[in-house]
Image 1 (cartoon, rainbow, N blue to C red):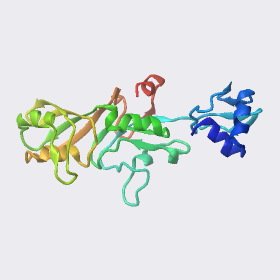
Image 2: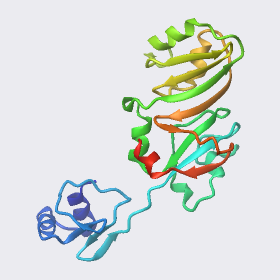
Image 3: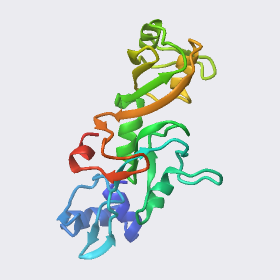
Image 4: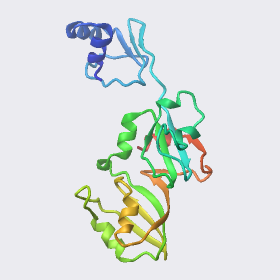
Length: 230
């Protein structure tokens, strides 16, 4: 929300009154005077008017989790354990998942309370590649490489997937880079070649790589450098 709109709503002031407050340097955002009417305000910002606190400002939180198999990518579920059940943090209900994984898919998962940050990470237009290790039941057909690179047509959604990079590592093992997250996308792409995915593990999202020190079910806060990479 813009600063002038926030002040008008929070302090019940007219737009003219808000302009005067800003011009008179009576508004502080995160401890600094601001006169910018269209400054974008977030829940993480501390806002004061004439020294009176209008908004405390929440702490932005960013966690890296090594998701284990058999865990639901949800904040609550009546039947199964969720990724949020693995988190031992205050106010964890404020967190949301940036990039879900299927029930038995393992690997890198990110949780945050920063919606703008997670959108930058997950929107296809951001071109943040998601890298997976894939194991299949049968030998991987080399024709998959070109087919994935061209994009594959999904009849149900009536769309063609974005180009994906497949590197075959062994007869039934490969590394796949996607730039989107369609429903069961990896399984459906290999299913086109009648090959069943038996294991799927996410190694990377954008520039963020799963910390190898994290065991399945473990998590840690992101570093400032990692946060800034998205």
